[in-house]
Length: 296
Image (cartoon, rainbow, N blue to C red; front, side, top):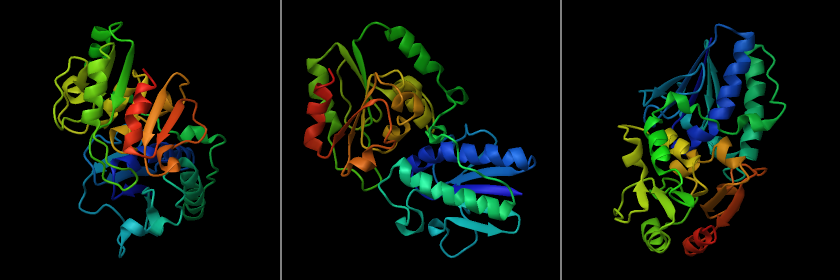
């Protein structure tokens, strides 16, 4: 028997599903020890390759089940295979309540019921949903260069800012010119170190560095960026790409962290409503610079 998790869409969908996928696989294996698991997706390899017992299959010819529009099908059972679509907006947004964890809990409870029906097993939800907050096994990724950088810069800066400045591929946030914002702020605050996740217009200021120059990985480095973000005091972004991957257990559940998110809706920016970190929601690009300055 094989369970195939799949997603036709973006990196954020993959990251936010990882806790649910991990829980599902571990619970099924307790009752069906010979079960096999795959996670098929359209993104680069090494995006979710750390999930235990689940084989990551990146950019396959066929991501979803053999049906008319697999991107819109939530659960599909055929032969000896059970397909589960992890896309946040699956089935025409039937579960839509902002891109947040509470909608995913409703969706995955339906998935657990389907697993019970098709696999003839007991599939209770977690006793505490905190289990499904994204956790990354960083040891599976290229983190040695990040560790070396942190050791070399230890004690040199008062605060570290992680800034996800790249383009977004969903419609939940406005455009923000992070390069201009960070150039101005960094120039006036040399005691702070700013990490930019993408080189757009390169900033030549000593206390602005690019995460790719630290990580030095050819391929998907989202998990390495997430690891780097755990060393930072303030996390800035727009709920996409590196910003989503910074939404991990270590950051969300740390009262000493501040997360600044710019999005059209607050419930699209705040993934987990019971988070412990400080959360600042910015509905407009004009609000981002004052929010960052308030953390210095």
